View (cartoon, rainbow, N blue to C red):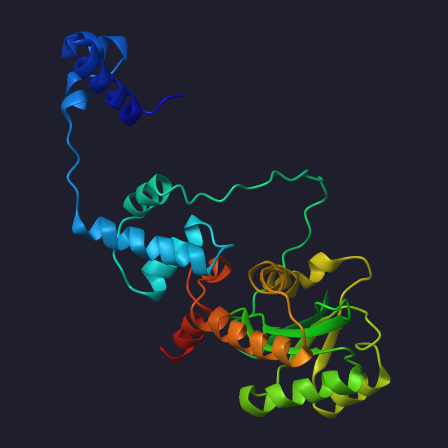
Length: 276
């Protein structure tokens, strides 16, 4: 279907080149004479919006319109109407092409409990990737379920139970300890060392059922963001390079990236609501 704006352009070309009347051209291309004579009122703000959108989509290649708009509205504080921003977004042809997915119909799982305060429940999980030379490395990801804040991304070739405990101790030093930690049944988590550590700190380890990653949905969704917005965007040559990049990305995730699961604000903004 041809948009009215495009039909208006064609009608004007016919009037100019073929010397037909405006009325005939409008009838031919099914537009009103009001539409034909309409002249859009350009605003200097439109150029500012376009500049922001271009810079955002270039820097955050996996962000769609909604994340861009929430960033401009909630993080940067601009009061632009979403319809106006979306119109400019479309005119710039910044739409992300979404590959349709085959839907598998399953029974609706029970929703996860939503924590009411920080340090009520953390979630942790591992991810895998490769360096440019093919060597595999792992990341240990920890989030606070309350505000979806990324608490740590630990990177190394091997992350045994000892490293998991050390990473958790480092988080507790500045964050405080959680009441419970949700995790899967990986060997690092079912280790007697981690069980003894949790008992010593009076922390409950909540193991999900094998083969049911949806029971750990908070960190699984976080892992997807880590994968598509950070890991999949770069090729790393050393573990140190990965760790430095992870630290920088984690700050951006917590402070700059709107999270739709917590109302379109950033994890740090959600955390700030605890003080009000």
